[in-house]
Image (cartoon, rainbow, N blue to C red; front, side, top):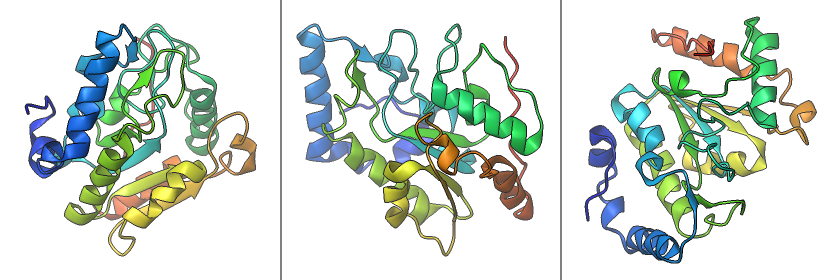
Length: 227
């Protein structure tokens, strides 16, 4: 089966694509589409996080849970929305923390995080697809097995990656990470329901850059400019 995914990821994940669970994901998505279901993100963007952040350039992982389920929002990057869509509440809070942490003004009307991804920040959702207006509708079709394998592969094959785990769901993935060779930063989820319980003030953006700099790596330029 031919999976259209960036070459360096295709190499390190090649065994996953041959496993029965992955074939079940493909069959499920084809069945949904045949039944007229609208699925986000569009097919060409399901693996966008991998396209924008090749395995060879990976430095940071920000783990999300589920793609946005409204029209025009999801484009395969966790917490990010397409051009023309206002930042959703969690992203607004991420912007607030960046401004408080490192003092740069973030855009109010622009939520496309592709610039981060292109600097080596893997914006990975645990589920890579969702049915329109039905959050978590694809959460149990096998994606978690795939994305757990992605996290474990990163842990096994790389060194010095900074993992940002926001909220209980993301923190449950900590067991997949070898902390003797990687860095794990944990905080509350940036959602309006929990951001004031430990996300605000976590300073993860400056801490990430300190950890990268100590390894001789280029820090992430978190600043975003509206197009």
